[in-house]
Length: 457
Image 1: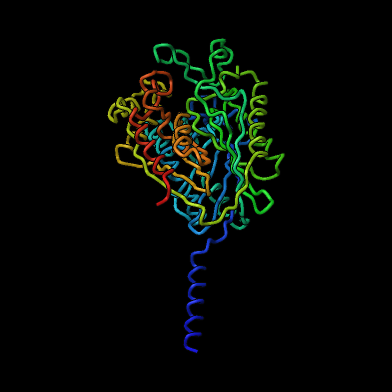
Image 2: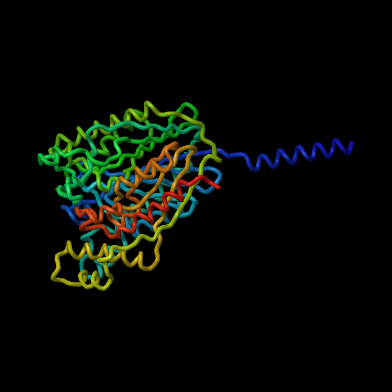
């Protein structure tokens, strides 16, 4: 009798112990909010005509993933950028609404130029020198932040089980091309921007270094699709700058796929800082739907070739590495303050000084920008800051060639362009003129990416 009692107790203990370590259910909810700015609001950080009309609405859309640990949120805005203090505050508000921590929230933008940007700290500096509302619309930004957070929190009530994920890849033809054309001396001889296709030299030059594929992550509840994430690296502009708010060709492609699939589609911009449609786009209005259809075709191919695998809670992991990015050597606080306060400078010069100063102060104070990775079985979804060069995306994929790696850039927009080390000696607009980080940034970011992609110990 005693032996039987001991045996039963051992079995019960084993069952109880196993249940503690058993993977719990995975659940996912989606949310979407209209984030279209009101008439008169600044667009593209005050660098183009303010809002004159609404051609298409702008959205913030995302997912909340619930599993054994605290929820993870991925959110993508149809905005040009969310930087510095705004980036921190948007993540904090969303985290509070869904019951997680800011470190487990990734916010990205698609970088359309007929769209607003946000940085509460920069706007505050400009207000102090008599330039309020030139860079952004902070009241609208704050209202938007609260609306997105509220929608993310409310979405939890509609969470559904996720049993499988589908991973796919599709080739996108005649959209992306590298913006930086190098001469025989290794220097940039042609800056191929988004609509440079009107120039013969831009059309004739090779595509250059790009990632030609769109990557897709689909969430499934058994045989029912729940939501789709897509990733593609390029500037999303066809034509812009006249005050007509729109989500451009990436938004059109996303809507085409959402209409076809009948489920939420969330698109994220990859490391497209030095990539645009310039070889294939001359700025004519008929190019926007053409580029959209080409991207949508790549998305369709990725969907149709996806491979489904089971997803359990113990196959999910979230990793974060904080990075303090090295400031460009020529950016000094005292000089930037003087430029900001000099009323003889143009508004654009003073806005640039305010943006530079905000970032420099944060980095000099030791602030760290979160770089994160969501692991879903064999998939690794990287979340990176700034207008990142595509070489970082390609390097991440090469680090773990046996895994599926998708990259979302345009997280914290504070650093601006983030080039490779050699790019800073090649000249060109991105690294020669406007990047806020030094060539040493490559070593810092690549180290963080390696840590995130390293096998779990």
